[in-house]
Length: 195
Image 1 (cartoon, helix red, strand yellow):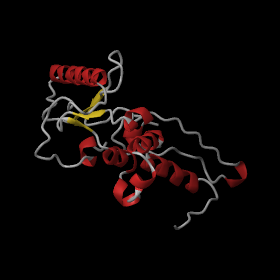
Image 2 (cartoon, one colour; image 1 turned 180 degrees about the horizontal axis):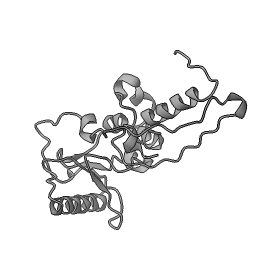
Image 3 (cartoon, rainbow, N blue to C red; image 1 turned 90 degrees about the vertical axis):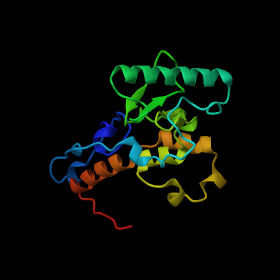
């Protein structure tokens, strides 16, 4: 299933296997239908501050000069590529992976490339109209549509930002999983449980 088709703003194909015992089966299982619209990545981002302007990655967005130079080169390449397509990265949100190799660049217009453990833990998602990389709590919203601080107010006391990024990148898009589970409950003798 493509996460974009089920309420996610990130491009990520996932394989799901559903098995329902014959003695529990109620009708034929049907996969959730695609949503008519796809949410924009910008809906899950903080409002820009006065200090944030469309730009290339800030000097301290990567720990080493070599990584920073590669990130800047990738961002410049994304700007050139989207400008050639007639899209202005200063006006339209381009989300680009600035932690990848130069031979495998990945960027999308108002959608995020697949949010992996490495990309999330290193905060490698560059946001063109902000001139910065995505924050951990913004990537959490991409995955869950919820606020990290409201769900886990004390998370910084128990896990590092990098560790939380790894967990976010390894997780499944919550609304997609919920849609599948609703279908499983409907087509089996399972009862909905109120929590």
